[in-house]
Length: 629
Ligand code: ADP
Image (cartoon, rainbow, N blue to C red; front, side):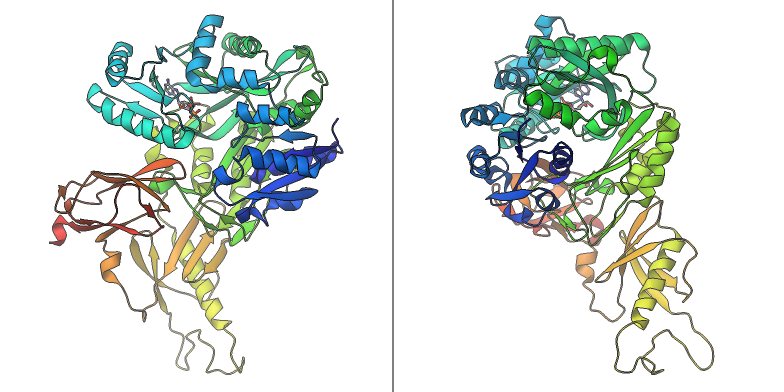
């Protein structure tokens, strides 16, 4: 076993790898960009080294900088985590050239599986079923249109180099193909530097089932059972579980066998995941991820194995610790990904400082994988995941129950998260019986939408406001003139407090008594975040004496929801637009976000051009709603 390991990553996965390395007596080196100087993974590692400025391409994606850091610190091996350079064959090559062990597969395996198109061709040859579609070299629009027609709509466009759902577009009809192709290619070019796409039949209501595989240098390949990752938004996973619920034994065995066969085709060494799409009693190969997966904890929870330990052992030349017949599983595990994102705004990533974070206790059956602490900031530079909560139960129902309980206890403020949304999934009747497919979230949109804030939340915020006012420091704490609880000689009056929640305002008669429920109330300026086991509500105190910018409240401008770059402008000053009509496209966090007209009306001005960078809150468009005229 090597003595020193550099982790070429950040956040929770860096912390995760460090934990196992430490247990195995391997010293750890963290790398960090300037915004991560004080990040958790830096303090958890034995030593840390700066690799560059915040943008990933100048730090975590800078191969030369990472390799130099490893050499400078005397690391013998490099663990890439997932994302960043984890599936970059050039990086694996560069490590080898520098005499470093890359904790991953060979560069050849990475290359063979790196392109979704090439991987599909390879699997077709090996007799593993693939989703019907076109994955040829000819990228001519006419060819792609003809192929899409042949496949039959709806079709799915995917980037060859794809990952993270980038460059993916569902197209329902031929008339929409050209625009979708342009968008997919633009997104793929910017995310991967490669705009080639493939087209697949878009399967309705399939399940995403993937198989964890492991190979060693002696040519042993095993599987560690499957995970169901069907609960997705934007084609990206939010809840994963193992084993897959309600999967018949024959199909399960066939999936395991196909996954091992796929790994064998590329002489696979290391942890890998073969992803399948399952529907209509059939399964199809989607892609192979040649790295440790975000959701590996659910596999660890049911098998009792440490996949990072296996990775380090295999990378240092040992054979797999267990043969297939010795690998079993017990119970059921579920992971929920807690993201800084707004489910009410199409899961738009959010940024901000976690001014409150109530930590959960980590146990053998409740794992909280995180890379942040209270006070840390979710920046636009990296993935907005805050934590993964993975729980085990002796059955699926027990696991769901534990998931709900622990999600309820996981409390953050300062940035909008999907915690409450995850809770509503955990409570959903269809989810509880395992009726999941990739359309689950879209289909249950209404049932999963945030309910109105309960009266008790307003009461809790009002109470906190009054209590805070009373606690305001003053020269004479005991003077009756400095208390501001509304006490009067002729009896109590109930102050009325005005709150804004979402786009509405509420008058609340505040009582000085604390509400009975267990709320956490976190104040940041005029914003009060009220949290309990069921939900969190951001209430803004409306100061009756402050000047109010009613024009801004009523709209009139469309602002950038996050910092980004304008990639397309579809309207100009003077245009009459319909509600929901796309006006411009902002690229942020490597994804495209469409800014649409909030109502029928007229565009008065478009303030930015294609290619311009905008700050969060920048006024993109001046707009007059039809009824406001
Ligand atoms: P990425 O690598 O960008 O994450 P994947 O190829 O893994 O993209 O696909 C992401 C998700 O998109 C899948 O989990 C599945 O839900 C959905 N998906 C992919 N291919 C298809 C398809 N042919 N039909 C329907 N859904 C699909």
